[in-house]
Image 1 (cartoon, rainbow, N blue to C red):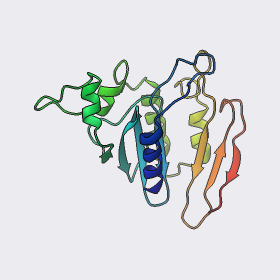
Image 2 (image 1 turned 135 degrees about the horizontal axis):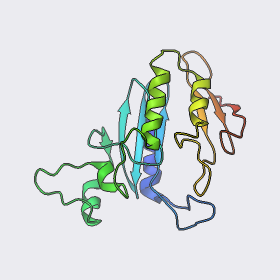
Image 3 (image 1 turned 45 degrees about the vertical axis):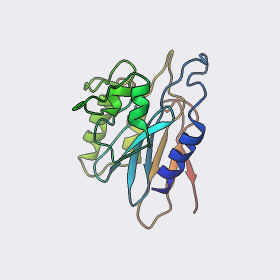
Length: 192
């Protein structure tokens, strides 16, 4: 929970910024984060300086350049509903549900099974249902082209990270600095 608190405090104080594409400084979007340790895990999704977070404790989750948290968030920034009203994205009239992803997603929410998000969800389910999901399975998902997880072209995947958190062991993190399909995942150990 501490990491969630630090990220959201920095977001509220400083906001988001910077281009998301090397060749197009005007291209920006709201960010999402997977935050996990051995005891708990959160999905954090943002809209400007505002945010929602959802805690989860079992199964697999993914984020793929789109907002996924709908109405089932566990905590949010103060004033998020007022912000949505000010932006003209939500009226807040009696009975209108506050659906974070629908309100703040440009172009709507794509939950189809053939979307990048849906493909990632399907691949995670396939591997994790076996009960033997491991680092190599995750690397294989991140290198997948058919799903659009590993992207090339006008919008490209620039790096990937796989973390292994096991009780009684030092956390291990494998990262790439380039496309996951063209790079070696290098082990980075972080000691507490």
